[in-house]
Image 1 (tube, rainbow, N blue to C red):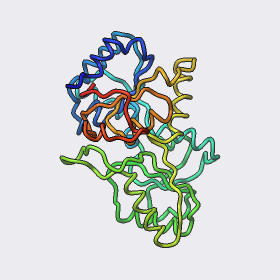
Image 2: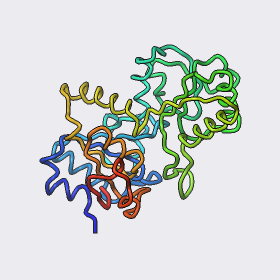
Image 3: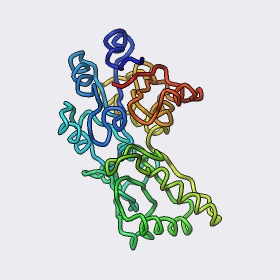
Image 4: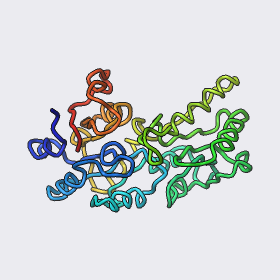
Amino acid sequence: MFETFSEFFLREGREKIDLVLFDVDGTLSCGGVPLPGTKKTVEMLKQENVPFLLLTNDCCSSHRQKAEALIKAGVPVSGDNVFSCGDVLKLWAKKNNYNGELFFVCGLLGDPCYAKAAGMRTTSDPALIDKCSGVIFGEGQYDWYYHLNAVFNFFLKNPHAPFLVLNPDSYWPSLYFKGLGLGTGAQARFIQSALHDAGKDTQIEYLGKPYPLLYESLKVELYERFGKEIPFSRVAMVGDSLASDIRGAKANGLLAYLVLSGITTSELAAAAPADRKPDMIFSGV
């Protein structure tokens, strides 16, 4: 029987951990409903004066929107507790000199919009895609038929334009129906595959977990928040995905803690390769 993360933390984790990063969907909540122990764990960390962030690949919800969904369900968090793959756009735009440029967006990028906060201009009108410098895949519901065809034709003409995917996940626990939803990572790779068949090899730039720019951006964020560098060796990543949460944590020197409350079973965890092998496994938070 696996213990919970909070049981471990109270027993010995306080001596090892200066900051906790929680994945949200499948770790703290599922289908918008908090998972067992979420409220208790958040309250415990507050009582122990241990900072925590919700490190999420959800880019269609702003900090405020992500926090409000949990607050409504009784979990005491705020927008200040959220760090999203959408926040990485700010560092990407700065590094690549795309401030002020127009980008075509598939899906949603939060309200307020992460791209606009990064100094980029956006449109979701397929008729304007040829005026754009590149494409950003957000999340949520949108008209796949018109948007994906527009993106396909844009990259046929501009194969080297930026192709940004904030959430690389292929699937996730759906908010709209029981089961798993098809993620934007899978949608973008479908377009990439079709372009390859058409003789155009495009490169997708992934900004969410487990890709490096997110953790570079996170370091900047932590320094700005706390006025000092927090060693990743003392930062715990608690999540349910071997492919994003655990692989990203292992590659960047964080403590990699898996919970079995989401998409990963104990059997999958036991068979995981070294780059996705969690340091510890918990039943939940």
